[in-house]
Length: 276
Image (cartoon, rainbow, N blue to C red; front, side):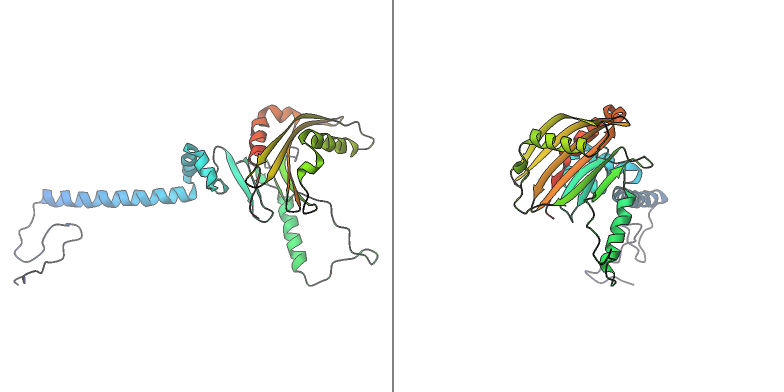
């Protein structure tokens, strides 16, 4: 059947440029194999590209973390370390309370806090009134961490946690004095909290990191606590905004301090307030 002017037959999906009309000359087996090989290569490269995207999305074999380690500042600025570790650290981003910090990727969240949060949510949703003691509502519990991480299976002596407390809305951390004054006050309270126990708290270092864009001052305190039953090193960060006092505390047994101090400094320096 003759072809009408301006009409071309549909090319073969495997042989892109071969005409399949009646009377067309058949290509040699070598040329057909060459065309098939070209199509196979294109499909192979497309499959590899798709597989690469899947590997990146799932951090298969640590590939995503490896690529992010090549440009850690970019990965952290985009907060990709919430999903994928960057240079050995994962980000905790708490949008409810408005803070973030990084912690070692091998550390796990405190399951006790998770169970407490679930119980609190269930109590808030419950239709039953809260229990009372002698006709009065129960006392409000003391501030407890809203986030905590540590090595899986450890005894809790090595960890980082964040406590968020309510303060007057116009309160500023500078109202308590400079970093050293605040550090001395904290250590006096630590020593006085264990009555009848010989506790010695020593302030090792105190500094301030100012964020002019958010009008927030971060007080970083490093101190050691020595008692007859333990020796501990702490790095804490304190700041306040909008009626909330934020306290990050990283602690480790003194024997572990040389191995974790650089990680603790990285944790403290990464602690920032976000838009809650």
